[in-house]
Length: 343
Image (cartoon, rainbow, N blue to C red; front, top):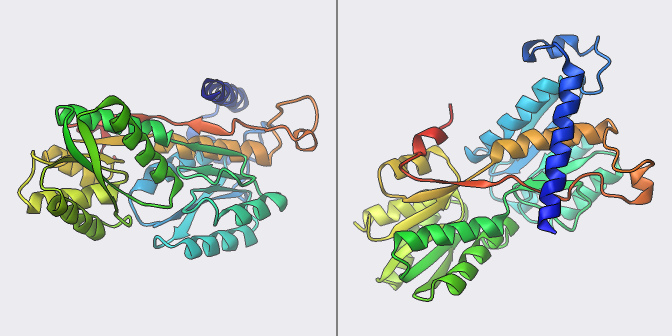
């Protein structure tokens, strides 16, 4: 089933590229906007078309890669990409921001979901009002969203477990610092815990702590974990803030090299800690792909360019896009860390 989804994703992406090249002809990326009114290509839009990315904890560096991808796609299409989100890790605040965006009637919404259930009704209202919604990074799978682009979070947890196991010699007590209640983090944690249990009989997950997506809270959680489990040899942190917080606690406890850290994402603090040897590795997501293809999907939906059947796919209740697109991960270590700094 998963293979079929990935194949479908590649087919859709290939068709998008072919259509784009056909539409643009000899135009360069610098002239896309100026030719938007003279081209008959369906892939040349208008600056009046506004597509909005909605996030939470909107000021963190992590979202920059995704929005850069969205901006790049918007530039090629000649449309406008905007960014907004909840300032804090607050479910009610993100719901409010999303409802405000819906009221503005944008051409499409690219949304990451702080909580799958809380965002379900606003997503459905947007769809019912004719505003296409694509989710990325964190999904709301029971909503009417057309597609989700993101990491296969369970598989990312599997990779993190194998990476940490190699670092600790496949034995010892390990822990997890995560964000309970957020689907993508729960899946990463599940992949990690299941893999440790199935593949590494001499390892044991002894603690799972809430990092609250905050460096200070994560440092406190890590310090408490090390105090409660003095034989701890490693930790998996499921996002960047928790990784940097854990690194702070490990440094303060003088346990660098004794407690190994596998983190998630590639903000500057994480990468700097890898170069310093405090964080051993991090799992890098394909955030640019999330934003780029999310924008492309929204545009195609808005302009009715998706034709999965010979007829009205809405009336026939046929999915217009692959429901899930895995944008992949890479393991970042000292050997390749320099390639992941934002330019």
